Image (tube, rainbow, N blue to C red; front, side, top):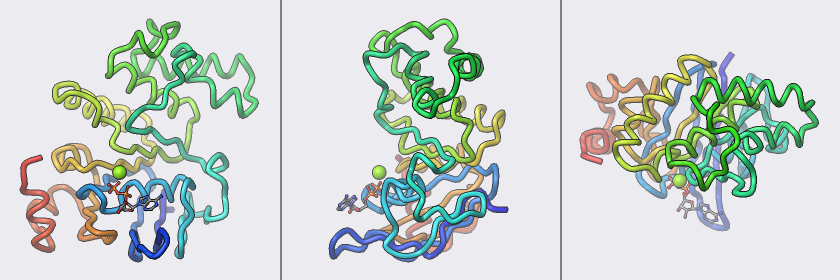
Length: 238
Ligand code: ADP
Ligand code: MG
């Protein structure tokens, strides 16, 4: 069963159509990257999967179940944003446990899940710190920790590394891939950076102006680009 199905999805804002009938089947456990130039509709598609935007037409399925009418909090997903969205007045542990507290999970269970996630992400010594006392990479890890503790079926990442410097970006790419290999959670990851896509994805979906130009493994796209757009995009320096 597919992890996430995007079926003939269209999205208009007012009179402007920004997603033109997109179909993508994402297998359970896959690491799929949506890549394309700024404004091509990547974030909109991710927000549609998360339930933060409605579809104009078409369907989203998660684990085979249509979720079009399901509120974001009821979807079995966790999203990591570009700006992390950490709460400045909460410690690392509180940031990681907050969503669990809201959903009525017991203190003991929260402590256990936060402890496990901190262990995986090397955050254990930092659990009592506040976000302003952390480096960019550490904040990024806390944002991932908040997603992991929810134990979702699907992770959604929207340009999670774009606020980091080049060196840290390379390190975090490797950390996110290791995390995926360990947890095997279906991941949909958005970036405009083709190097990130080529080095991290199982499957790359190249988007342009609200359509899919090609979907395939990094090697397929590199060896057999389906059109000039894909060839140019994959081949150009970031
Ligand atoms: P990307 O993430 O690929 O840069 P977006 O999905 O953010 O692209 O945006 C795709 C297009 O949809 C852009 O032209 C953007 O201006 C437009 N758009 C996104 N959100 C809204 C909105 N809430 N209202 C109107 N237009 C929007
Ligand atoms: Mg975007």
